[in-house]
Image (cartoon, rainbow, N blue to C red; front, side, top):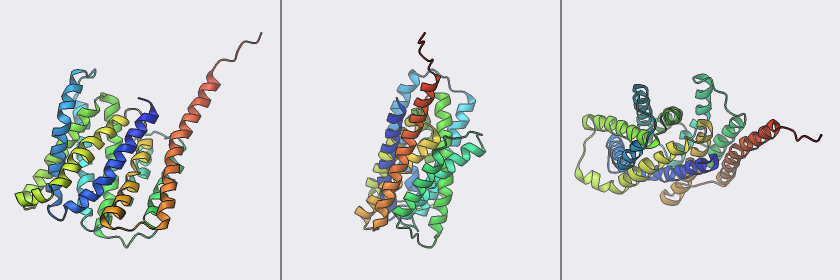
Length: 304
């Protein structure tokens, strides 16, 4: 898979996640956040499991204890992000949630620099700033006073950045993206169900009322989109992945306006253009740099 194809997969994942924001918000009218998270990720794990088993037959790398630890850590990061985002949606809007979640665009490169001692391509920094600025403009440049949900979503962005970074490391070492998907879904689903059983009431009527949202988010936002994420991250960097995945805010805010009546100000359209420009820069500039470097390394033709 080329880097362009990988980044397009990540863009598709972001579009699916954008629709998930609406489903996550409306589901809270019928069911508690941890029951919702637990059921969605159990469904996701079951949906991806057959593909994981097929992948395992052709795997070239055996699962080592380090890989199991990485699967667990990625799953815990996913659980932290899903839990704080879902609880936050009870007291914030889809637009605010999608904007604040997009802060992981800046956090991912910071993690690479501080913890992994890796310097991303220079275009990542202006691209990240442009993407976050675009997301902010998408909200109209006027976020309401921070609520508890907003603050929880800030924490969510940190967890998402950790999950993106860990997923990139794990897939590069194991070459088994579907195994990672199944493992992180299972860990997240199990953690959420334990909390739900202890802390939240449940009834079949509540599950039935939230069934469309649970199925959409479980099969598409979780099973399909997260699998596209880890597959795409095999062929691109975590920092570039974060830029493309951040466009989920664009899709989330647009669908929030269309389906929930949340308004998008004119400034939001400028934000969309800014985000699109950031994605193009992150895609094109490294490719131009690589080609120029390749041209410089080519031996000069012998004219004698």
